[in-house]
Length: 290
Image 1 (tube, one colour):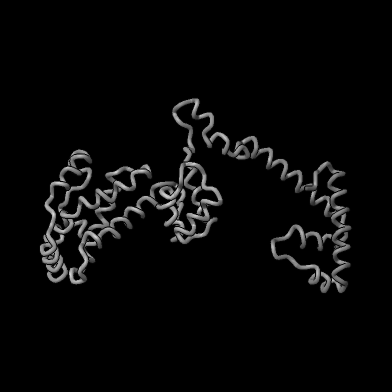
Image 2 (spheres, one colour):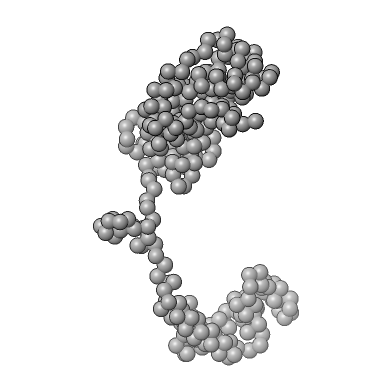
């Protein structure tokens, strides 16, 4: 059973403002160690959801505290808190009071993990961190940099040793983090619309005029090519068509050599001579042979 669906806990957007939510969770009573153990056992042994609710509610302030460390990623603080709350609920469900560890210590991992996943999903349109080393760099590189400038090769070596990653991974992540998402469509402002990517990414070849010109050119080239091929002897035409005008995976020189009972070198010579005559015939018709 999912705790998220059954516990009537306040969410950051349910109290009118985020400040009101923070004030509300800070007023919630904290549990003593004995109370925490008793409630955790009741949840584990009897699936007592009221015990789970008390465990979660008493640790909501922890989520707020952890979420504050991720303000610099430009994502809404209430969203970070809500994702952290999901991690807290997962921790409560998995918490074992017999291990001698307080829930606050156990829950930190789950809260951070959910917030990390949310940031990686939403911070950029293009996913930045997919491997373990990249995730480690994503969440630690900014705090390890001396300033906002690009990481130098020497600094990359130092950071790489600290995080047990490769220096090239440090430089790559620093480059990724220094970039930003750009709006593809033009903005409302005329000045901003001038430099919008959609202006210079437009496919000019897709206009009706360009398509008509392309169709005419293909028709002329096709007719010219057929006329040029007609000037070749049967063997030369067979070699050119099979080697250059057929589908991928056509016969090799050795296969054609076996077919005509000559050497592969002789087939290559016939092919070269045929291509030379073919180009001359196309040029005589005013068709460029690219």
